[in-house]
Length: 64
Image (cartoon, rainbow, N blue to C red; front, top):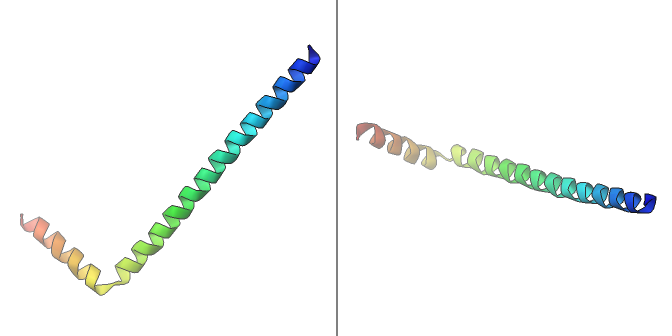
């Protein structure tokens, strides 16, 4: 009976460790993607052409 409890406890601890590892890896990859998207957006905002197009779009939306 004690062996069964030990095996069960070991399997649950491995399952929780595996689940936590996967969750952590997904969270890290999401943060990495968000950081890359922020960098790309920052580069876009530095572009004068993009800013002009954006302002024209906003002015057009306000006129409608």
